[in-house]
Image (cartoon, rainbow, N blue to C red; front, side, top):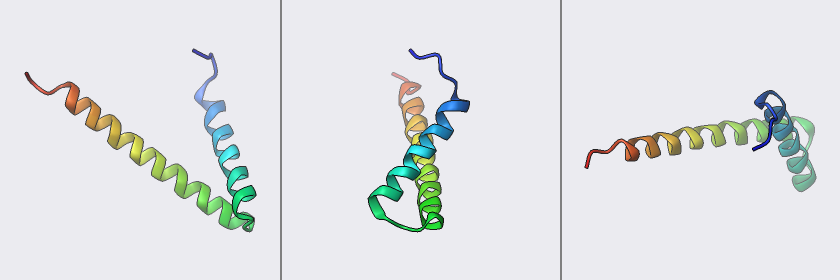
Amino acid sequence: AFAVTEALLVPLALLVDGVMFAWSYDQPRRAVAVMTAIHAVVSMLLGIILIGVAVLLASMPG
């Protein structure tokens, strides 16, 4: 729908995520960076798993 590349969206999403963690939890920058990194990794793993399950279900015979 939008002609915006992932090279712009991913850093922007991480920045917004970090700002929201900092605003919500009022933690030091290092803790915010760790929380943002953990959130990014867990989100990617969950996305990979859900896409894999969807592909398996779509390719199921019958």
